[in-house]
Amino acid sequence: MNERMEKKEALRRWLVLAVIALAFCGGASALAVNPPAAREPESLDLGYRRMYSLDFEGAGRAFASWQRERPEDPRGPVSEAAGLLFSELYRLGILETQFFVDDGSFTERGSRRPDASVKVRFDAARDRAEVLARRRLADDPGDADALFALALSSGLEADYLSLIEDRNVAALSPTKHASEWAEKLLRVDPDYADAYLATGLSKYIIGSTPAPIRWVLRIGGFSGDKKEGVRELELTAERGRFLAPFARLLLSVAYLRQGDTARARRMLERLNEDFPENPLYAREIARIAHQ
Image (cartoon, rainbow, N blue to C red):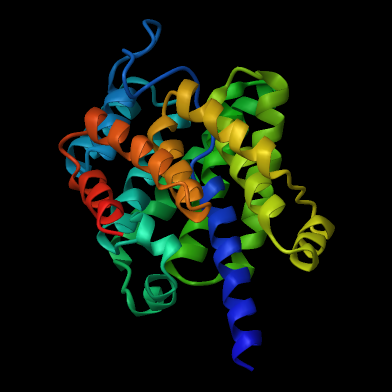
């Protein structure tokens, strides 16, 4: 019985990691160390930088500024939703690598209480983004920014269901939708590097699972290749605009699971250098050092 429960819990962890891969998919170019693209206002990039620095109020102001400047752009409200979710994940302790590596931290997540008011704002922002995105796709089915917004929105929904509400089965449908939107985005623009976060981690996780689980997931339309998954995650980590820092955090988890603490530490040190205001990365580095 204990062995059966352990296998069930391992499957749940793999599914949660697959969902989080899709929670932040979309974007382009580089954010963490490069300036924002000249053709766009600074506020959207600034919002993500503040989000990764855990300045959630500042991130919210930047995303609101973008929406005032570009009311027709679905990336504004979907980024607002991302900031709200990221703040909840941090408040609940889910962004720490220990959450995914340590079994005790993972199983205790059911005791965490979400903020109902944040959920209302989160859903409203996602709804606005989807309305705007579908309106733009009706005029131009190849609108990359609209595809990004729909991929991100579906992924955020899946992430909330799985990581915060502990509803992993319910999260599978929006997870699949996020993956489909991300694949459409990459067909339109293969250089939209942030989309590789979703496809890369999904491939890595499924490629790492035991054969019976991998078979079940493939029936559901998910395919896996561990090495290819890491390669795609590294594409986002190096070239992603909005999601490069998040890809580095996920890579550090993957490296820790492989027992490669040196590479995990280097990834976290890079995050710590880029976002010194965020104590999370320094704390994770210290945790690795004491293992």
